[in-house]
Image (cartoon, rainbow, N blue to C red):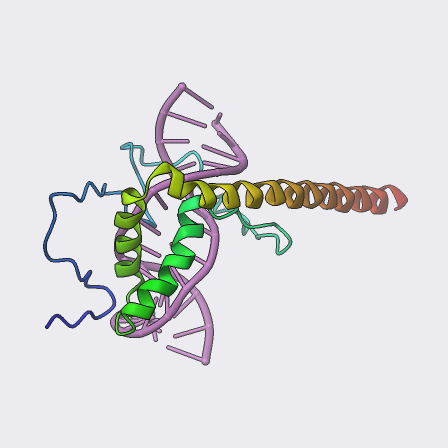
Length: 139
DNA sequence: ACTGTGATTGTTGCT
DNA sequence: AGCAACAATCACAGT
């Protein structure tokens, strides 16, 4: 048996229908551009705001969330997230638009809430800057 | 002991 | 308009 030990993706066969791109997460460099314009400023630590709302999960993630439960329920031995991800991706592509509809609907709702959170977040940021400005002005 | 990684697709955000 | 990074998850490996 294949000891699905975490990393080793337990998918030795069926590469035909696997158009996975090389977009490995972590270092995605599509263009041969050595310097990423979007690169985080190494100078000064890019402190992440704890209040910054995280991006809303896409329909795929919404589906994946439920899929993980099902997958783990049927494969409690599988502990590799990669396996669930691949299985979920394959299943996701197998789903029809109608079946993805409810997930997309939820995703849309999530997005709406996200926009609201972002709005409040930006507002807070502005407020924070305002306080800072006020403090400086007061000096 | 803690943090990063690995894989999936979609969405968002900046240039 | 297009590319790049990041969203959850969970166990393991490395520092």
